[in-house]
Length: 321
Image (cartoon, one colour):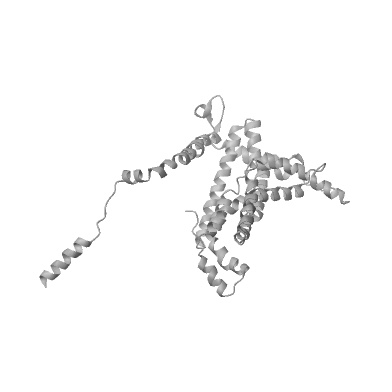
């Protein structure tokens, strides 16, 4: 019995898998092609995201372009006090929040709806053609889109107004009246971004188990019920992550879109943080004031990301960290 147990113990010891420790350098060399592909993205983020953070010091200086960052006088939070005392500051913050919130309400659901509709198409050539046509506006410059908008909606000679007046109605001030301009602004944004946004959701849809659809068909579920009870829950985590990222940009707005589409007649809506920074920083050479505005914008965006991520986790979602 003692010999048998000894034999069994030796066999067990000999068959136990041995863990081979590899040096980190060996693992890196094995996947060196993948690490090589990371060089450009890492260089991009270092050069254009992290290095420019050094310039945030200008917000706390009486910056002089001739003295540079190291030679300019430090004045603490004086630029922020001056910024918060300006009536225009509250106007551009209000407009930025208004336009971004409206984009969140109307533009954010658009790619989700499009992805659900495209996912239901069964004729492949039509599906691919529709996707291509929907993606195209994303690759157009806002300068080109702005030109198209003026050709379509201009009060004098615009295609839409020509059609309206030919039917015996008065022309509509699409680009010169605030509320009409807001509708054109939102509609143009949806048209430009919705198709490209479907890519992420279509990719998420591929991860849904097909057996769930087959089981629901056996139970007699139609397309709408399958979308509501299977497809939407299947991409819910992706929707939450995209929503958190969108909330992080609630104080950040692109420069081209409001600048190209805006004009003095709709200034009450079109004047936003990015156009304010452009006019204060480049046109008026108030670099410290413009940097203070940019830093304030970034801090508010960071706050929105942290809070929205915490709320998402509280409701059982994964969040972004």
